[in-house]
Each structure stands twice: as structure tokens, then as C-alpha cells.
Amino acid sequence: DKHYVVEKIGKSLETNTPKYQILNKTTNLGGAGFVFKVLKSINKKNLLFLTKNNKNQYLNKDKNIIEINSNEKNIIKNRYWFKEKKILQLNDDNLKKTINEKKILNKLKSVLKKYNINKIIVSDYNHGVIFQKLVDYICDYCKKNKILLFVDSQIRNVSEIKNFEHVDYFFMNNKEKEIYFKKYNIKNLNELITKQNFKNIILKKGKFGISIFGKNNFNIKGLKGKKIIDEAGAGDTLLAFFCHLIEKENINLVLKKSNKEAYKMITERKKYVW
Image (cartoon, rainbow, N blue to C red):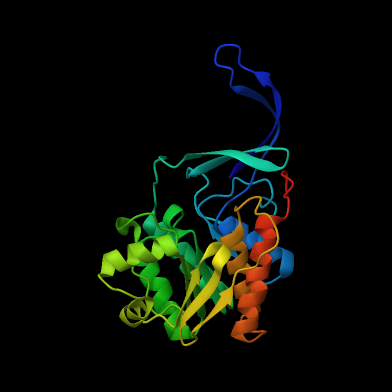
């Protein structure tokens, strides 16, 4: 993610459209990088972050960053901010994605062998290092070793769906839910849970709150009272706090606290640079 803070300097003489000037710029990893950052802010130890590259000014000095390929290109989201409000977002997601599957899988295996891992979080996998053989290995490894597995679904169409199985907590939003229904020709999330052997699905419903299906079934209402300023980072914040708290609190309280943190993320003014 690239963030540009701008100021208005007038209007174009030719078209009468507003003109802006860039005051400063910052870059940070979105998706999994943001999840790692939030987790690091609340739990400063025992974290490892596996990423295809590490072109990030916030993360580049962290010894817990495990880089796979420094030459890999990123998908770029350009966000423009005026008076602490986002006024425009331009995405460049047509970059060539080259994945060395053998290298990535070997790197993951070496990490799992070296460290005592008790949780694995797969976040933003459509844009990162995830491919089906890696998915199969992660799912099988977590099942055999009784490791909690969290997956945040990031898909835009049926072709992007990876075949995850035996996931403890599978996160998705309403749009992604409909894509899964189309893919598997099903009508409800309980059918998906049965088909993929999921333990729980967390359905993110934005301002309407969160629902959980599976071993637990209930709703958490959305919070009200504040204006939504910027939606960026809400899902990643929810995921990070949920994963951190899940073994410390009951599931109802975990969802409430995680939802509250996500709500703070979208209603409080962010200052870029972070």
C-alpha cells in the first residue's frame, strides 16, 4: 500500500478540476503485513512473518521477517489523502506474479522445523505466496500437529478459490460468501463447513457486525455512533486481535473485542505516515 498525503492547490484552467500536490508519501505492506503489524503492537514476541519480499520501511529491520524472493513484484494500492480523509484509491494489480513453488514450500518447511509454532495465519493469500500445494501442506501439517489454523479469504471470483480444509477459523465477507456458494453450488455456510471440514466460519458483515457458524453459532451486532472515515485495515485488525485473544477469552468476548478494535480502525483518523 502506498499512501500519499496531498493538499489542494487550485483548479485546472483547462478542465476546472481540482489540482492537488503531494506533501509526503509512505509505503507499508497491506494484508498479511498489516496483520503482522497489529499483532506485533499487541504481542511483541513469538511472531514470524513469511512474505515474498520485504520492500517495506516499517518491517525491514525486523528479525522476524522471513523473505522468500527479494525480486518479486508487489500488487500496489495507491491511496490519496486530503485533510485526513481518503479521496481516491488507484490499484495496480496487473503485475506479473512469478511464484517459485519449490522455494516457498521448502522455506516454510524449514521454518516449521526450526520453530515451535502453535498458530498459523494465512492472510490475503490471493495476492501473496499461496498456491494449492502449499495450502495442502499447511492444512495437513496443522491437522497432524494440532496447530490452530486461521485463514482470511481474499477472493474476487471463483477461479481464485484455493481448496482449504480442516481450518479452525475461516474468515470471509458477504461478497466472498456468494462466490463460495457459486463455486460449490451450496445455499448456506453450514454446507461449506461440512464440505471443507471447517470448524468455524467467521462472516464479516461490516457495519452490521460479525456472525460465527460451526461449533459456535451466534451474531455480534455492529457498533454505531461514529462516522466511518476509512475502511482500510478493518478486516486485518479483526483477524489479528481474534487470533491473539482466542486462547485467552471465551469466543463471544473474543469476537466483541475484535469487532470493537476493527470499528476503532475505521472510525479513528489515521495519520499517514504510520
